[in-house]
Length: 134
Image (cartoon, rainbow, N blue to C red; front, top):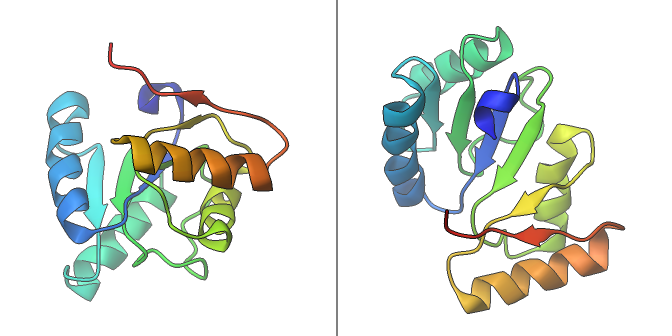
């Protein structure tokens, strides 16, 4: 999905998950194509990642809540949420980064799937297709 879009913003709930996903995506897409973004990184590294995404130098950024709504990162083609955001307002803000549309929600356990499904059904007009292992 990332290669089919100009820019992808992947939201996760924890720094640990961001640190696990970012290196794996770099292996798949190339070292300069993906950056992590979380509060434990220096301000300089976060700003550098934001600027690279805005300038089209990154294909994807894996971020926690450290990438707030007030940060200007330019046009985002695709937003992914890994795991439930645990609140409807957070979910809507994150989806709003990508033209207010929804494609696919990924869940890593049954509880997370049900929570994500409930949030989706109660906030957005379209349904979603659960992720499957390929």
